[in-house]
Length: 431
Image (cartoon, rainbow, N blue to C red):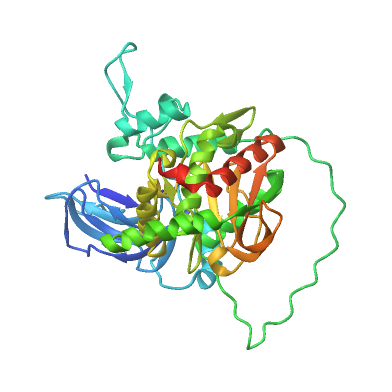
């Protein structure tokens, strides 16, 4: 029977997507696994693959158009099938901007309400004690066991309704973000805002994209629902700078990539989080989830926002492995080629603005995480050595932003002390 292709939900926070371009054209033959189109989500640009075979009969959305998750994109016909009489797009495809389309769209929405796509149901096959078992990938089962997620309660988004790793991570993050609601006191009415002045010829109005809207919503959530507190410490960067120079001399002679200061900081953060597991945790309503592995997110600035690709099981990886993976993930982030599994599920984050000349700062926590490490620039300054003499020195200010529901001051201080110890004796990270 004819198959309707809809805008897929490609990340846990995605509510709409922009169809950048169709790779397949009307009349093209489509096989399972073929790339149908490129879609821009709130986090990255991704390829939309076909899960069925046939011929692309119709497309309802033009290149560059933004539509809601679940909206019809195209129609796929099997061999010998004809187009059904009611195969019409839910709305005419247009290349108008969102601002131009909004009045017309709202008018049509009031006349005809489109049915919402049915939620995917978990698919089960016969086996096991109860006569059934959940259809899930091996990786999804492993992650579910680590995070304490019940597979039986999850819908599957993979081929044939199969539960994949992203379904488990999404369910865990949604659970971690669920906070018991409490009555809030009624605040006095705020004074009326001064209306904006007319836009001059020098002003530029920039329409928010999906990524910027998501960033705005998540940061507002973080600052209004997470009780932040802050710690900072100045570390002696001399041993770190010297070790990096020695290792880079060896790497250069061998034709290998050089290490950055950030590579060492990421490695140290992963080890410190493993040594102080109470800092590698999330608040989940009436429980605290303490993670058994460090999924370390690294903040990467891109043209229209910020993404945080994740190094999996970072505490188990060598400095060389981390350095290579960070470079690869950062390149994919800047070209918007990250896959959901490469930016979802972080348990702790490092944000480094040292390369921008920032001495120190306090970052906003990335929910549902409970801690983020902020890294400033290496500062050359006079310091007092162990003998009491004033000598030239190099220092870095590290800062922590912590969720006080999860991380008490003593735990934050313990984590920061361990991070400082590792960075001031960096050879410990090489053994």
